[in-house]
Amino acid sequence: MDHSNTRDNNLLDLFLNEVRALVFARDVAPDSTLAELGFDSVIIVDLLIRCEEIYSITIQPELLRLDEFTTLRSMHEQLMGSAESSIRERQSDVG
Image 1: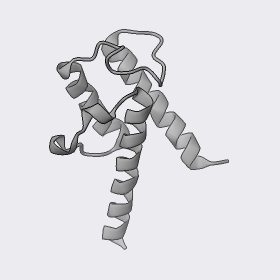
Image 2: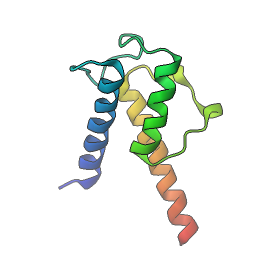
Image 3: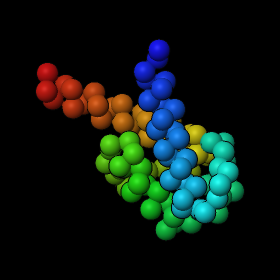
Image 4: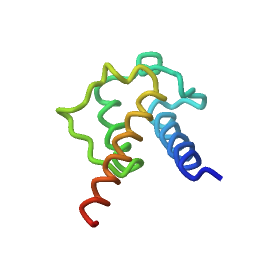
């Protein structure tokens, strides 16, 4: 069993559930864009706060490139990359 793939899928599900709650929608596909879902700046900030909890990361606003989040899946993948980097940094600090 590939635990990293299972973790990735679980986090994607959690992420999509948060998006569903924010936009009051049942069906939100991973390949939906923020524009398609009617995201505005307030919803994006709320989602990013929730993402910090989901991915156990701190999102630094000055590093955000919202134009790179073409789909929810791409946003998830970027957040997963940040989460993995954060884990490696914590491990190197301990080791």
